[in-house]
Amino acid sequence: MSSQDTARESLAGYLGSNPDDYTVRDGVITTPGKFEGEELWVPYFYAAGLDGGSFDTVEHDDGNLSDAFELEPGEAELIGHPGAELVVLHYFDSGFVSGEAGTKAEFEKMRSSIRDTVVDEEG
Image 1 (spheres, helix red, strand yellow):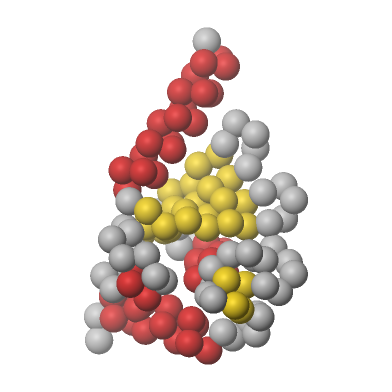
Image 2 (cartoon, rainbow, N blue to C red):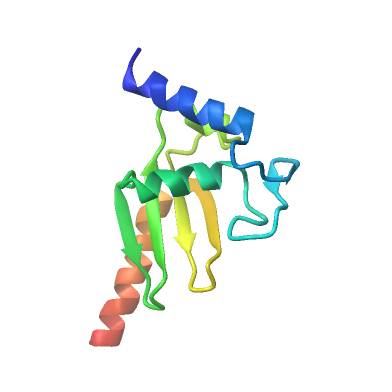
């Protein structure tokens, strides 16, 4: 079994079993807490991030962080975002975590706008 197959099975197993026992309605977590209002895949990638699974971390000028995770083939469909190449988690000082799925180009645009802001503040 390839590592891509293993990753896809791990994500599918997590989504199918909801091991953290969140209350979910229409794919969105309704249990109060850091993931409330987010899709069920967000805690999966949050845990992966704790294990160093992100490929890039961005620090925003407000001090908040975002982690990007590349999706393996088939994972975009599993999380309900066909065509997505990666997911990005945003961590807020309030303790909440939000996630979005998108393309590498969208992520690079976000990175560029942050760099431009930081450069403008320094210059």
